[in-house]
Image 1 (tube, rainbow, N blue to C red):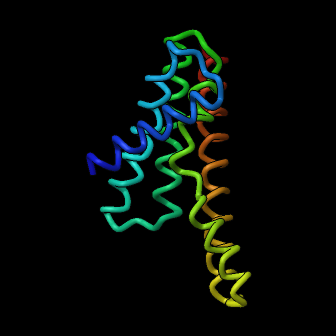
Image 2: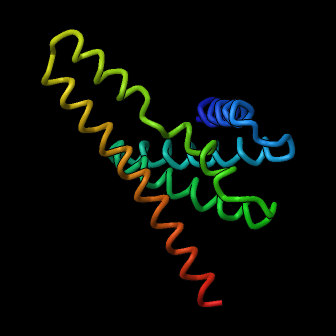
Image 3: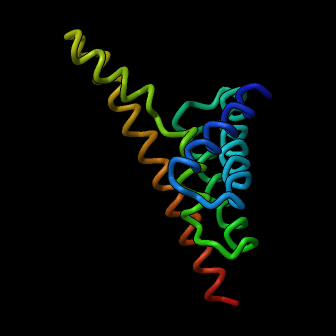
Length: 140
């Protein structure tokens, strides 16, 4: 688990560099991605599905991004976009296209639907947390 979380940290860190995030925010971006992947990994170990695990991982990334944005007085997207990178279903997209090319439409449909579900729950998690955050801010 530690190797995967550290790998998620560095993947997020280097994507933040590609996205031209300022140097003072690189480590918090990496931490955001690492925490999100850690939650995803723990959920997978509790035998939750990939889709549900992705939801909780994305929810954690969004929560962490909001906290860091307030603390660092920076837009949430600085931490959110780079932090979500480890959870993006790139392997599912690859497998979908691979099975389309090899004429295995059953497998391509399976991976394609799973990839869409993962992308959907990531978006839903971000929207839920952002909406929840706005409701709390309005009540204050």
